[in-house]
Amino acid sequence: MSATGMSPFLGGSASRELPGRAPDDAQVPSPERDRGIVASVLDAAGNARGSGYNFAYLDEGTKRMIRRAILKAIAVPGYQVPFASREMPMPYGWGTGGVQVTAAILGQSDVLKVIDQGADDTTNAVSIRRFFAKTSGVATTTRTTEATVIQTRHRIPETPLTEGQILVYQVPIPEPLRFLEPRETETRQLHALAEYGAMHVKLYEDISRHGHIATTYAYPVEVAGRYVMDPSPTPKFDNPKMDDCPALQLFGAGRERRIYAVPPYTRVRSLDFEDHPFRVQEFTQPCALCGARGHYLDEVVTDDSGGRMFICSDTDICETRVAEAAR
Amino acid sequence: MSAPLLSAHGLTKTYGNRLACAGIDLDITEGEVLAIVGESGSGKSTLLSLLAGELAPDSGEVRYRMRDGQTRSLADLGPAALRRLMRTDWGFVRQDARQGLRMAVSAGGNVGERLMGMGERHYGRIRGQALDWLGRVEIEAGRVDDPPSQFSGGMRQRLQIARNLVTGPRLVLMDEPTSGLDVSVQARLLDLIRRLSAELGLAVIIVTHDLAVARLLSHRIAVMRAGRVIETGLTDRVLDDPEHAYTQLLVASVLAA
Image (cartoon, rainbow over all chains, first blue to last red; front, top):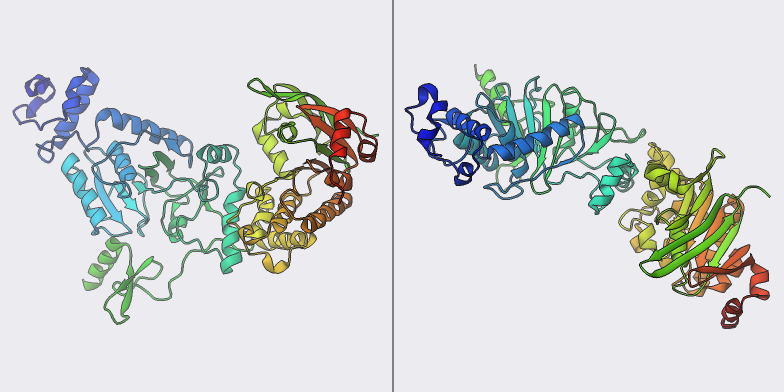
């Protein structure tokens, strides 16, 4: 199908030059499919011009497959839904799962924020944000409050999330039972029968070795009273934010090909013992830049003679607070 | 005599054309120790897996009297109930401790796992029980945080026993628990099994090729050959006055020390 063949769908913008398409898009003559592609091209017109890719990189068939997995994941909170993960133009470990989920849910009116360990300005965050700006043309932001979709690697923003926002996590290893049980067939069985005694063995080991639960990230949680889930390697500091959260939380693991979800306002409970209850990390000093207490802090080495400072890992809230103080 | 705790009827299992178990019937009551003896390849381990519900028989069934007094067929239980039975009311001591233990987890964690699986969520109580059980199987309290990879063979088997008995099971299956141990360690382990099974009134089914182990531990013996039970009876009777020609051969083959 040629660009002129599509013009009936283009309406007022018919005179605009159309961006190119991936060659395989043209091979399936389906009206529904074509509408999808044309609409995508239209949304992206201007920004995506000449990129050669469909809106938000993935073809519409793949997006529908991923959306089906997402819907199933939302219907069964905490359950890992297998999906046909695609090769993405970035290596595994750089967020291929999160990127696919984001691509599948992104619409033209969305505002995207991408963070890596809380920061908007690190390599991973910058490249993924640019990737979507280029392939979808959606607006991007670093402000948590302005974003409708936030893709994250290992942090939940300090600013409380609201209804209508979607948090997309990049997940390296989705299976919380993996360290005790290497067989996938067996872990599925354990999830199906809700046999989670082994999860507490790990916490038991922590206490017997360190005197307290020393797991500080990827701290296992029970979702909606049923499935035990790995919250991805977020610090356990962020676990309480997942509980009863107004935003939708989606988890994508590209290499392991799993998608799971926590719907809005869902109970998320961190596993613990009665006599060793769950506790988050505490910081003795405030952020060295904005003076905030109760935020998760990163240790930054400032020189080669032992100088260091502790600053907010969430760059957005830190910068906002610094700017407010200056006013 | 009360109804049996576990009874098997006509258990048959083939692997392709090979017959592993053929028409096996057996009963065991509480407090009874039954030894299954026979040479390698006679179907002892397959029988144990069938009894434990790990393998599905081609025909025949295993019935078990549950804690609520109801006798039910294992085939009707479903995987969830069967697994719960396995980790609460039953124990399974493996020949190879690495199959029965988590080698990277401390001894205390190994013993405590079943408790945590049953919903115990109090660290202090779990640890207390673990220490108590380590004591009962003669492992020093100081080793509670060491992983079994640092234990000797005999200690690993004793740890397996503690791990299985912590939930107060009524039936324990043992697959060659003493093989590969030297004689003095073996003797200590046998003593321990005999003492605990008597103290706790356990029903024990022990598979062994060692007639001395069978004589020391068991009340009754079933002799297997080529997938069939060829002779059963009280241990002393079978070993001192064997009826079947094969049993006679087996008893005669034992080297006198």
